[in-house]
Amino acid sequence: MRHGAKLPHYLRSVRIIDTHTHLYQPAFDGDRVEAMARCEAAGVNTLLLPNIDTASIARVHDMMDRWPDRCFGMMGLHPCHVQQDAWEGELGTIETALRSSDRRYVAIGEIGFDLHWDKTTLDIQHVAFERQVAWAKEMDLPIVIHVREAFDAMFEALDSLNDSSLRGVVHCFTGNLEQAQRVLEYGDFYLGMGGVSTYKNGGLDAVLPHVPKDRVVLETDSPYLSPVPHRGKRNESSYTAIVAQRVADLWQGSLAETAEITTANAERLFRLNQFQPKR
Ligand SMILES: [Zn+2]
Image (tube, rainbow, N blue to C red; front, side, top):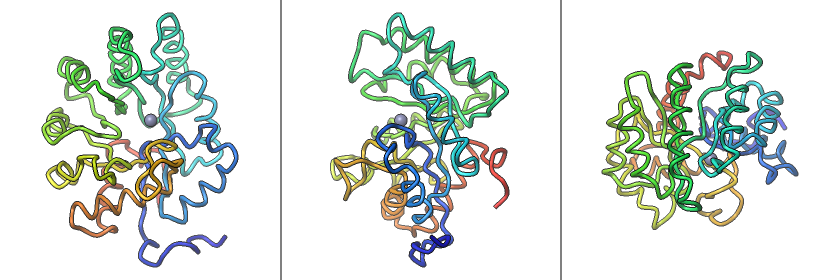
């Protein structure tokens, strides 16, 4: 396919970044190359890949190696994988990957709090979060926060850990305006907007028009949480363009302007100019 051949004319100069995608997961083992081509056709030229646990590390590395100009990895332990007995070993492996000189990661992620599936691990989720935040400060990397039914836990942790050396994003933000403003008050923090912004009951139509445009980044969280009209089906990174259009509508702006602003935000937060060749 000729570069950009499938791109509608109004999208040809648009550059969109999917700041949170698990395209490395088995859900894409059958058509990952095609999914990457669909990204290019939709103007989604950069993908940031959050790690989940020790089993996913090799998959993240595979995509970083295969598409070194388009795929950038993160390293971290997801709160759902902070499990009794296993979590310290997993964190050790993740720390080894982070400190290895083989690869550079754009963030510590994804880390955070999840009380949807298991409330019994809250104590160790706090310890794992604190340890990973310390790495982020030491290595001058942003944190990518997952929070599900656990805003109180996240705020409690950030209230005590945040300082001027910390920056990050609350990915797949689903909170209300008050919670959004509280996140932004931490300083160099951003809100990650994904498919939920397209849901009628998602509540983000009451948030997005009221937050500063320079604090929003786009994502899919694929293969989860597909935007309308793909809701309920597998999500993929090319759909970041749908999220961009939805955010543009809520901002009453153009897709091109929204893409430009959110891409600049992502490049600033993740310091992508240190990773990407000049375009
Ligand atoms: Zn994720």
